[in-house]
Amino acid sequence: MERILVEELNAEVEVPVSKEITIDGEVYKLIGRIDARKDNTIIEIKTSKSDVGIPREEHMLQLKIYINMLNASYGILLYITPDRITEFYVDTGITDDKLAELAQDYIYARHTPKHDWECKYCVFAKVCPHKVNVNEGKDAS
Image (cartoon, rainbow, N blue to C red):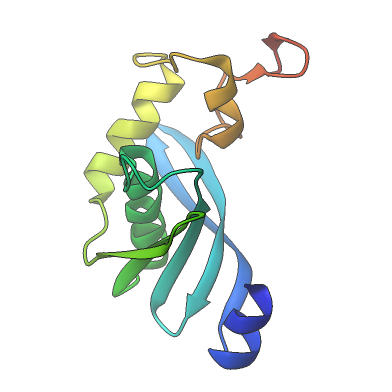
């Protein structure tokens, strides 16, 4: 997949992204890594054992956050399953206000994950004081 993205599409892969936001007078730096970027389009790739239930809400949110962070035109959520490859186009990111609200929810533990393993995939894991290290089963902050 990486070869196709780089050689055929001339896309950048594993692109680091960051954005600073201020919450209650404190500056937080959100950090992520998008799978690929071609011009002003973000490509996020997910694998799944089944195509039932896709696109997943958290994957759509992740892509919308990346669109905001890079001020991109739009994004493509690409699912690879044993049966098919499916694309979902997202033409708007979340607003800065919504991004700040989501960050506040995690910083102040308003909505902690239902399962410990979710911390591993959370876009706010680097700044979350409630992050759980799945391997150790205890706070990793």
